[in-house]
Image (cartoon, rainbow, N blue to C red; front, side):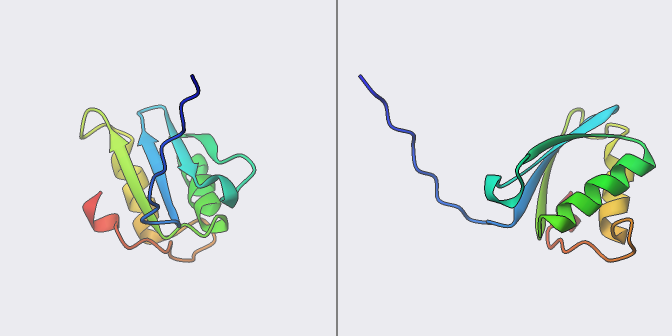
Length: 100
């Protein structure tokens, strides 16, 4: 018996998801945004800048994050970088950062 893949309504097509860890972060965008839509980034400043630049290159407008425990060491630097902008000085286009 063949099961069908359930259809999911896309609410935010330009969204990304980030699983925040102390040593690395996994980020995902829609498959049509990048040939490698899931990537791992380190938690140091240079890697966070690469993450922000990648999100901009994928035209991400909103980000959902997940971290355990809630106040893991990796969350604060990433939140600060995304709010201030990517490595090239442009502000990230993110409408949901206040909820991080």
